[in-house]
Amino acid sequence: MKVSIVTPSYNQGQFIERTLQSVASQTGAEIEHVVFDGGSKDDTVAVLKAFVPPVRWVSKKDKGQTDAVNQGIRATDGEIIGWLNSDDVYYPGAIAHVVTFFEQNPDVDIVYGLADHIDLEDRAFEEYPTEPWNLDRLKETCFICQPALFFRRRVVEQHGLLDESLNYCMDYAYWLRLGKAGVRFALLREKLAGSRLYADNKTLGARVKVHAEINDMFKHLFGKVPDRWLFNYAHAVVEQRHSREEGKNSFACRVGAASMCAAWKWNRKVSSAMLKSIYSWIRR
Image 1 (cartoon, rainbow, N blue to C red):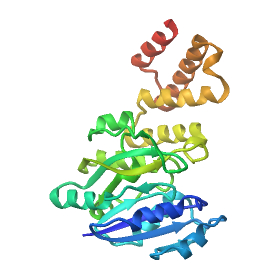
Image 2: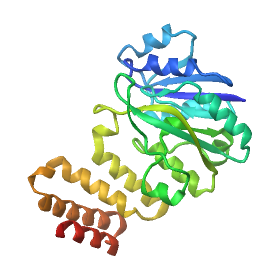
Image 3: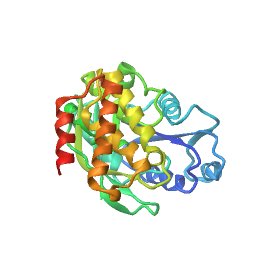
């Protein structure tokens, strides 16, 4: 069984060698690793040129991370596909565990494992909150850690590539889209990857934009946005300008108002459950 690993990259020279090494050290399958770099200005290309064993790579301007992932998928032919960002790592034995699981479960289309959040020095500081597969629960929270997920190429052939209009939640949107289409997911209870979490990374650096895009995505896929994501968006908006320390009641009122505005913007109504939640915050 051949496994294709796709790495989108842009100006991650401080991390990419560790990413490459984490793939090169894997066993248990024929593995091809391709890197699609968006024309990095740091030392990324120098690292790619010098890395042993050599990897296939391209460095040129692209349309962003989602475009780079899609280019990588199209450029490979493995039966199994993994997507590993240029600041994340696989743990030893990850691919062998995944291949064994797919071989033993031919009806499963997508497998995802356990993972850690890691710091700048690769130290794990918390476990990713992974849960067993449930589409309704996935709508409430993204319990799948992206680098710990692998899918069969037949998924792409039947359901297409990632949505290139998305800049932040392209992975979460893909899992939801595939789940909605009835694609079969399964949890592998092995720790497979480290997902790097730090202040300068794209998701943490643009919380309001991230949550707005998630809400737009839910509206497009399901026709409405769950209250939980409206609350998340409202918290991000309020926390941009106000501290929780200025007064719990004042902060709760601001988040409540922002939540109702978000509900009207995306759902054209405020649910009774949202109103009850806001009332309980203010009363406390």
